[in-house]
Image (cartoon, rainbow, N blue to C red; front, side, top):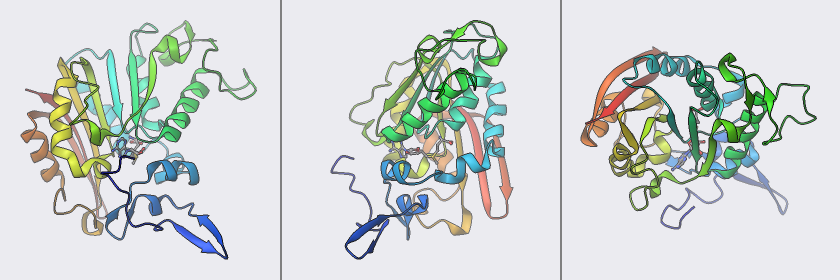
Amino acid sequence: MPERFPPGPPGAFTRFKGDRKLLSRNYRDYFIVDGVHVGDYEGMYLNCPDPWNIEALGLRLDMEAALLLLKRHPGYIRKVLDLGCGSGFFSLELLKTLSANKAPGELSLTLADVSPTALKLAEKRFNAFLIPPGEGETGFRPERAAPGGPGGSPGTRSLKELKVEFLPLDLRLIPENNPFRGGNHDLVVMAQILWGILERLQEILSGLGGALSPDGALLVSQHFPGEKQKYGKEVVGSPGDLKAFLRDAGFTELHSLETDRDQNHHYGGLWKFS
Ligand SMILES: C[S@@+](CC[C@H](N)C(=O)[O-])C[C@H]1O[C@@H](n2cnc3c(N)ncnc32)[C@H](O)[C@@H]1O
């Protein structure tokens, strides 16, 4: 983490027993504590068994909504960038959906996250998907080719053949050093990453327009905790606020899907850059 993005209150996620420092296994302690963005995502993936209960909850409605929105994508999707991919649960759903009816290697997918440990978990998840259970002792052998392609198409598979890359990156550095400019991506995904980039949201969004191909689109999927929101409410407190940031960055909304459950609001939107 660069110095100009200091983590939140020191010790927010630690407790002590005698002279031993015990690390919390609760992901919330590494995320937002008492309205302060701690943002120790690497510590979180190292110490917590299932951040955001991703494994426990499985394919959530917001993910299904995001996949549904892809049917409205204006162009053919070959090159995909998933920003803040975490342990790759949703990224793998993207791969399964988007690789259907494509030849191996026709789709390329770049997964980026600030946490190298999250990326390792994502790589492991992708390999486990590519190597059927029982074919290997660990299921984690990147160069091993296995029969049958994702989405049911035949052929050999490995992450290399499928053109899947894992990129450690703090998105808050995009305004100074944008590795995606001119990247010609058909799809850029930002799923549930708003709070980790809030402090530089406008500059980051402005930098992402140039990452898209002419028919490319940005897929945004974001949960809003309503009354329970303590961090960043004055910057973005609703889907309307987020949409205003996207418009100011030069994006136009193509399609959206919103759901309400209890006090939780979920926004999914597909945006083009114009
Ligand atoms: C709630 S998880 C979402 C993971 C995945 N996109 C999904 O929908 O399941 C948020 C992810 O964003 C990553 N993240 C947060 N701030 C980031 C930043 N500034 N740069 C890169 N990744 C970031 C975190 O490490 C975490 O993996």
